[in-house]
Image 1 (cartoon, helix red, strand yellow):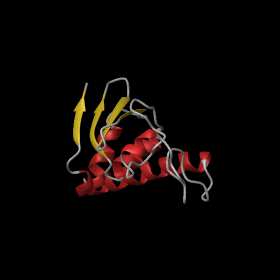
Image 2: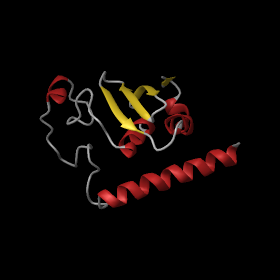
Image 3: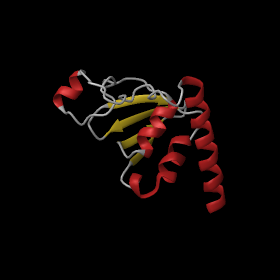
Image 4: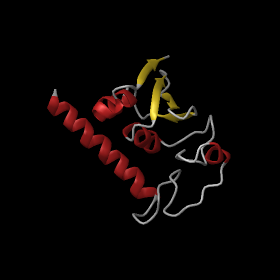
Length: 126
């Protein structure tokens, strides 16, 4: 079982790496992440200065790699997946974001691999 988890982790990390290398150079912040020294001005930041991804409003769609990063960073309170591969992320700050996983249950594998940091994430299937 541990070998399967290790293989899945390598596959997901390779997939995330491939996605990121195609869209950003190492000196750029990934889309949706505040860059170094950035002065966010989005309303969410004005309400709570510790909000990450200030440009993402409730209901925004994010890439799968962004969604996986948010899960692995411990920013997600709940994930809900549907049979059509749509995933809803409920962030701890109250916003809800949407993404699409490549295959069914991929989001659940990311939560499982995250370990203790993601222990409190609620999961649901529609």
